[in-house]
Image (cartoon, rainbow, N blue to C red):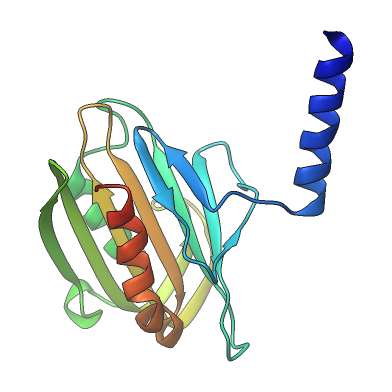
Length: 176
């Protein structure tokens, strides 16, 4: 039995080392399908339940997609998170083309968020790590009794616009 466990762990370590990454992954109760051209990234923080890279075919910079889940009642409500995301732009809310849209999918409320402008990275309300102009954010909040799942994609504006349908397709893949 120990030998089988050792072999299993060795194979698992080799898969991680070799870059094998899931194309289907779970965050809370939801199973997401990663868009084919996107890349799995090892999460940079224990708060991030999954993390993806959106490569730019033009080589002008990549986008980042992060998934958060804090459990029932944690992470703040939908509107608080929408406001927090929109406050990560230097310009005022009226100048970042801020849009929200609510949809009912698979028995869950999903709130989509979009904005563009000068994105200020770092923890909202915390220190700024950098300021990136001509950036955009696409977000989705899936409400659930088991705790909302927060999905935020940020990157260069052109790349985010061209990735919008892949982003929504990924979100909605978990709600079918």
